[in-house]
Image 1 (cartoon, rainbow, N blue to C red):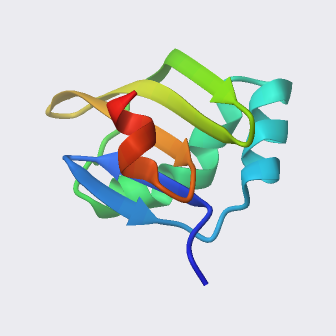
Image 2 (image 1 turned 90 degrees about the horizontal axis):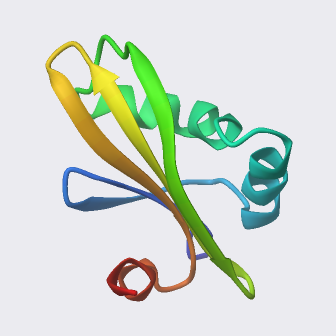
Length: 94
């Protein structure tokens, strides 16, 4: 079974077990909520000492989405993207 939602961080796509509908619902409740679903994935990639998470941008079309955050951590800032798609590379290109 293919992942529905990916985290794009440090130029790598990381598949998750999240469902698109759950992420969209969380986003509609609060734009920062989806980040909490992926916080552990981010920290496991060496982004530790997270000080602040800022919503940057989002785009939704049909059943695909891209949600972007800027994450300030102990060593600087990094962009983190949550992508809901069967083809996350295409969504990122757009």
